[in-house]
Image (cartoon, rainbow, N blue to C red; front, side, top):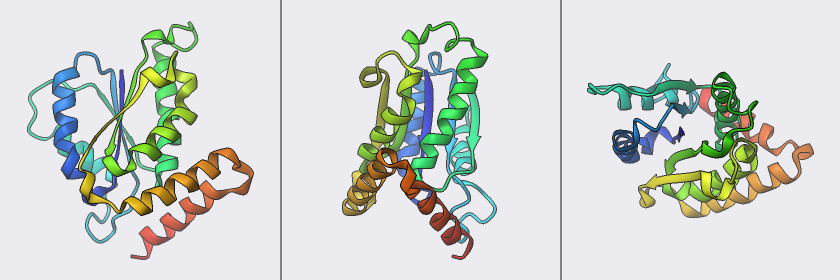
Length: 188
């Protein structure tokens, strides 16, 4: 199993204890944890990526052996969190020779995110990651917490926006949103 943790830094600490619990309960089955998130919070975490802050939270004060940890620090949007995580998952699976041998039956991807993002994250994950697992509906799942943290309307807009981005990639919507978020992060 590969676990992908996608966060909005300001809200992440609400569901990171859930991630810790999931790791404690399933640690022997998890081969890798990928923390996704770029340098989006110049005011509150200047010089630190969301991925780094989340991984620090999870790894602090633990005596348990953790799975391999990867930081994906180049993304500023949910779309690119998911897309860049795929590249890391492919490397992990290739190193374990699971994709080449066609033995993807046992591969499971679990994504942790803030609950209001879950529909968007699931849509993107099933679109971008379905080639990695045998049954995308069963083997790509989302673990969530903290419904009250984000504006649900904004998430509906993001869901539609990302659906357009994956349906009509030639429009460049994902790239445009990524540039906008990078600019915003650098000029807060």
